[in-house]
Image 1 (cartoon, helix red, strand yellow):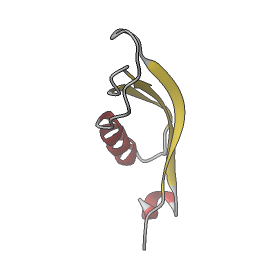
Image 2 (cartoon, helix red, strand yellow):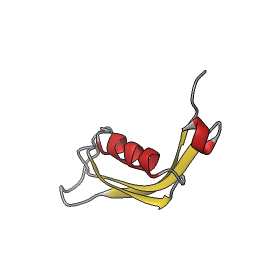
Image 3 (cartoon, one colour):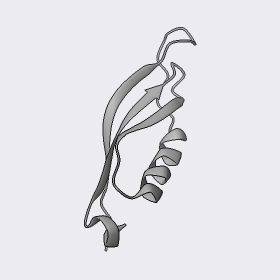
Image 4 (cartoon, one colour):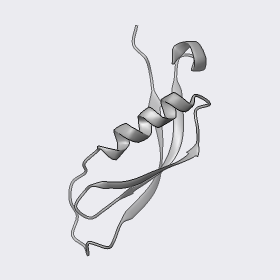
Length: 73
């Protein structure tokens, strides 16, 4: 990642979460220019679990977020 994108890599996504806290979708709004990184972030985000919120099962919350990676070393 560092060789391709420098000291930080980020992408902007639209993240949708169901009331039980499960991520239902991740849409890339602005990619990092490194497709493998973007796909890895999407796969990771799809496994995230948030705190459940009251609401009908059909409801979902979608928010825009920027995910930034800072490599160590």
